[in-house]
Length: 571
Ligand SMILES: [Zn+2]
Ligand SMILES: [Zn+2]
Image (cartoon, rainbow, N blue to C red; front, side, top):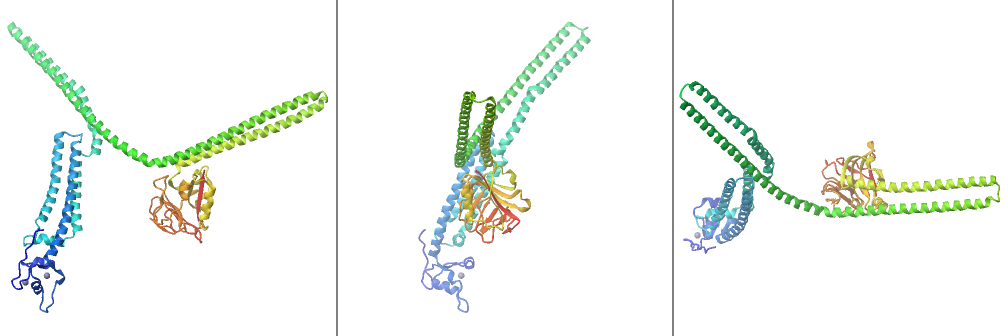
């Protein structure tokens, strides 16, 4: 800031470097700067009371404050200017590379956009210029200085930002009006091509056919007319006739020339259309390629985020596979065992028979027959036993496979989701782990029990049941045991399930266990967040009076004998 010279006061010889910053005084007085005694005198009323005393300030102090604001504003205005310039660059590039319009058209659009933005840049420039004028205090920049001094900078910043935002909106709207919105243009492309195609077809077929007919009839008319003329005049000289023939010939030639010209013209038009059509198609293909690239990136990001989940899934599937393989191996072993048993038994009975046969000589026939019958009976019994064992073994394996299938289906259809009005019969292969009405206390110990009963990869479905309709869950959610029974501490936030995007669990000691479709919860014992939300379930934990109390939008079900808490599991 330049050096400011303060005049000495005529009366006191003190420097005139004080001013009253009260807004009313600033607006009224002509002479603003005074020495301190004079300024006090001016503010003294008849009762000797001095007003505005707190507003008296040394001019140099004011200028320091003003300079601070100036610096801040300059910085801010520079940032806004940069944003506008960046925006301009981005938009101009976008327009110039836009493939669906003629270059002249695009240039016109660019010009208008640049105009609009430079208007805003001018406005910023004016703001800056006005501030730059303020180097020291004088009558001329009195207003600028005190506007700055009294200004609310937050207000100023938000005003300018609003202007920038309006500019962005206006330009984008303008581009949309000028058909420079990619998505809409792409939509319109198909229609345009259809119209083009129709035009080409029209040129190729009915248009040229119509013209041909027209010219043929012209020739025909000329011939008829000339014949008529000839008939009428054939009594006259031959010369006339010859002239007539020449005329007809020349007309014929002209028509033929015109015909071929027309055909050429039509052909050119068709070629031109085809060329144009082809070019537009190429442009669209290029644009679609760009979009595909963007899609690829989206897909890659999606894959990245799914990777963890997939890996978990793969692990589980691998475990299942191994389990099935073990079962199959067991089954095979059992079968082998049974086969070898059968063989041993066969050998044994053969031996027996042989022994019998050798000893037969010593016994009479009757005895032999009796003994044979007994042995045959024993043989049959053993056969039945073996058969039964084999059947049981098969049944066991089939059941195990069935359970695995059910588990797999549960993974596909139930996992990571919240279900309403869900029939329990659809929980194929699930086993009941807990079922009690809300009069019964649900405890951490019970959770510990269930966790010991099932593996942490078991799928758990839990929720609330209305006892009037015991065959279905009013509200239920399914997830792996390790997700469901993971302890949390935050009473305002639930933990996101890795199995689904709209499932969040919480298990807070001395509060409750439950789920919600988003992160925000409000545990006052149980969840009170969004009383209308039908997808929130919350059940008291270790509460001395019992369980409950929220199933969806019913929040007053504490200790209710008419509602139940159920937990199912499948391994
Ligand atoms: Zn005053
Ligand atoms: Zn004075």
